[in-house]
Length: 384
Ligand SMILES: Cc1cc2nc3c(=O)[nH]c(=O)nc-3n(C[C@H](O)[C@H](O)[C@H](O)COP(=O)(O)OP(=O)(O)OC[C@H]3O[C@@H](n4cnc5c(N)ncnc54)[C@H](O)[C@@H]3O)c2cc1C
Image 1: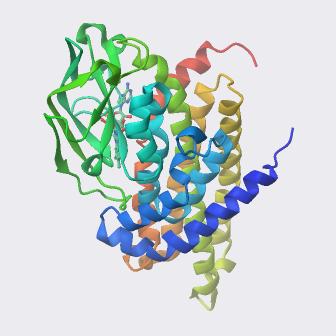
Image 2 (image 1 turned 90 degrees about the vertical axis):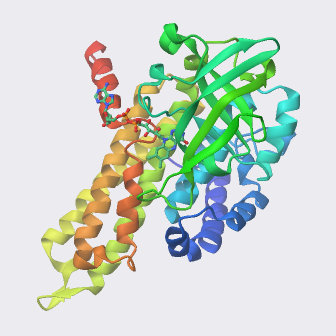
């Protein structure tokens, strides 16, 4: 076993950290308060080439391995959870299906400009009546000569209000449930495609989230992403594994920021004649956090390695997401307790981590749903 990152990965982490500290960190408070998409920052990150992290060099990408991409997701989330969400949507889910199944023409028209940051992408699963339960998808795709007609609405779409293109989950046969689902590429400007309401979120400001409307949108056959209609679920495991590990490392990043900052506060804040860092009950918070943080982060990177080695790791990725996200909820809660009343002031950062961390509970799968699947898997398991 070797727990070290490679020299290239360490160098990559240092480079990303430098960009994050220089470009994002000074603006974090302003991004949170503006609650808007920071377009100039987006351009700066695009110019650094990161938007093509996982895509082939042929289209302008970096062709980075899975672990390297997870290092990127962890580093970016250290500064701004919201901007990191906008970026990860573009790098991972928003361009995944186009990159994997798009024709050469689609890749030139959509993927290449996404890698340069000129076009913004997203993925649309969620609807008003289906979030966790994708088999309940009501957006329909009906076959017509030369293509498909999409009808439905999608909610809670990250980058949705500013998206130039989106990968839309729709059913080609509602009677078949999950077996009837397919992904379709829809581009801005296609008749019938429009943006609905933009949502005002509790946290993760810096990404914009909203509703997308598909009112009889015709797309040509080549916009069906994947082999044949009704095959979407076949491709979901691969992308969900990566999304879950990415979410786990986002959680580690936020937790680490919150508790590092809380440690600084605890050393400086005096109560009853000495710094609160000298009280055992305060010290135990850091000890407990440290243990859970190390375990969660190590396990998340183990999962990244398993994905990279193409090992079967669906359950492990769900566990990693659950473990890290719950660890993060506890860390941001403890960080606020250490700050006392000051945690309630918008001028201090603890409240932002507290708000941002809530999203991690749903992105990549709600924990109750993961627990159902994991509990069943554990009960099926033999002795290990
Ligand atoms: C900031 C933000 C950004 C998002 N971005 C996107 C995006 O870009 N694209 C996209 O498609 N979606 C996006 N989403 C939506 C997200 O994926 C969903 O919120 C998530 O899938 C959960 O679905 P839901 O909210 O409908 O909850 P529901 O599925 O309605 O669940 C509600 C509650 O019921 C529980 N529950 C559900 N089923 C079971 C069960 N079988 N057993 C026990 N408990 C159960 C859940 O655990 C949860 O506690 C985003 C959400 C947020 C908050």
